[in-house]
Image 1 (cartoon, rainbow, N blue to C red):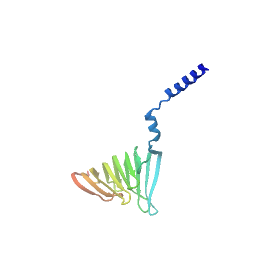
Image 2 (tube, rainbow, N blue to C red; image 1 turned 180 degrees about the vertical axis):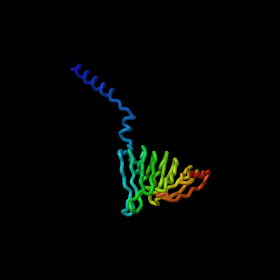
Image 3 (cartoon, rainbow, N blue to C red; image 1 turned 60 degrees about the vertical axis):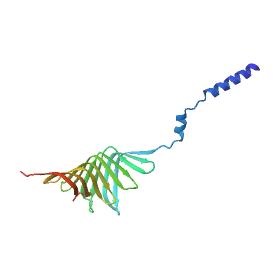
Image 4 (cartoon, rainbow, N blue to C red; image 1 turned 180 degrees about the horizontal axis):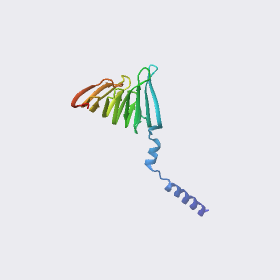
Length: 179
């Protein structure tokens, strides 16, 4: 009987000694994890008042659902902007974009190019696109190529059709001479 009690006490003490919890693992069970949705080969149509305004395509989209829902397009994007008759009036290409759904503004970064049907092209590395106003803006360096001129400056505001633009500070310009 004594050997039986000794065996039970030995097994019980072994179980108690071997039950050690890693505090980091326990804390990980109770921490809030960030929800991330991932989608590939995105094609999104944007409209206002029932009229199609733009078509966005991107190879990868990440949607983060933390304090405010945000969307990140980390591997390039392309947008075609349409007029009222669904003809393309301008295009946009960028390597990166982030969008906070509650602000309705898309922040574009890295090798941005916006061009219109006239052939005018905007080059910059940071640009904000306000979807509600249908405008682009930046306070960073920009370069614009037109048919007869190349302009360099800092800061710009333009409608998303890019038919006109206001450059805040022109730092240089070069006239193109036709041969």
